[in-house]
Length: 247
Length: 234
Image (cartoon, rainbow over the protein chains, first blue to last red):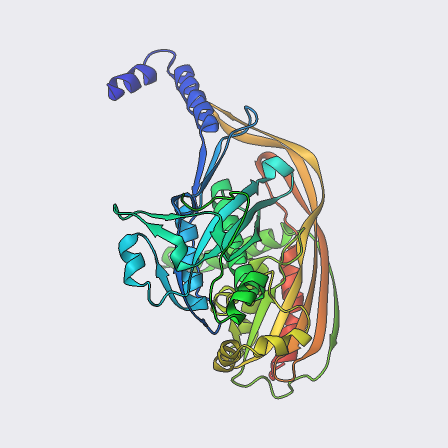
């Protein structure tokens, strides 16, 4: 059928006009399609003395499948879908395992109970906000990504497990809660597509988040208090639910 | 018969030379003019060269409105390696990855006073010793387009494609190299290079770019001065 259609288009006296019409239609359809970026990068392990802590880490579904969808504002623009979830998990796994003596990924009831004797605390990262700009938005020849993270440290006893293997976290129970921002930019370059540039900006932003986290972790007041108290978590409760974790 | 053969051989031998010369002449003609100014202030020069120690050249990228281009840093590194292959110049990106997270835009040391703080991290100090890092050269600056004018129209038709018009644009490079001596934890020199030039593109059917190698000249100028400083051969 496709061959017949092509034959119909490319034969006859109006062959050239038809070909041009099809080409124009294809170009129009391409211009209207969504632009998708699945962030990918290689992330180095941090060069630092690991803190003497065994940390559990929970990546919520929201975090591990994080993406941002931006609808086109006008006909000249495209929808954008930036998927950072896989890169987030890959990056934070690399960073945390270099920063702490031992890092254990807690996926379910089974992994929680297998390591409960040695875990000092559980960290739950969340992307609180993500914004991006491309030269079309700003008229500046730079692609930028800005991210805001929220981290919470939770005592092991505040993670509840269910018979079906699922884990739940009360979003109000934590003993340390802090946010940090990260920024990544990349200039326009010859033969660089918008997608490649947004990916590169996202990788730079992730690296910046890691640099910020690595250099500020031991200075977060709640963390300092916890570490100076011999890592005995004393959970406090918040009035408002600021949930990135599972309920 | 033998004379014809000789002529043919002669032509075959001479053609590449003429062709090379013609190409070189065309390339020379097709380059725009660039003006360059280089300022240098260096001291504690390693008169016997840097021996088996290594050097790293890194771009500054903490400013919000510009960042030193990675390819410019690579160009200077290549220039130094070409000038004296005994100098070990570390690859910028590999070095930044090896030292992560200490040379990210947020964490990179801005003053020589920060070196001591950096070396207080045992793993960082060990890595520096392993790399035999003696000099760190920071390059700060960028190349920008200063002006542009003219217009060009291109069209495609059944008979072929072509362009008609004239375009011109100016570029300016402004870079400063700051040399840190890691052994003495001190700054030992500053070299700056400012270059500017105008490029042209006339088009009668085929566009002919006459490009002013502004960034390339800045790279050569800085590279030459750094080579003089680091190399015992210069």
